[in-house]
Image (tube, rainbow, N blue to C red; front, side, top):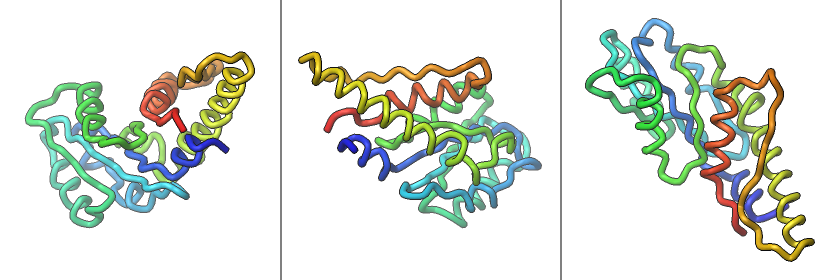
Length: 171
């Protein structure tokens, strides 16, 4: 495998978790138990101006797992998109994605559903594109295109595109 593939498989992975009034639904234990074999998995929660006890629940989660969990509280609700952007700004060179706090996707299974297959597809496509560039004498442009079918959730496509854009594509 290429150097890109090796670096990506030893990545610091940051999943942003936007939250708004999630104190009752937030299953902090699920995030603490979540792992990603061969990677450093971190969660950055963004409390989007919640009026319930979300901030207190997140502070307790950070106190329990400070090396893997962080959070920021926004003073007022700015919407999910803004919360995700604020979280992604805290990425510091990590491969990023986001996951909702509501439990729709169990964080303990994220490697099976999103991250693991994404790495494999990206690595394979990048290797193909590099080989094609080498065979045609063109420079490697650092681009890979991934196409999904009608069952692909839009949020997954956004995660794939963002992660691909953040990955290191050079040896």
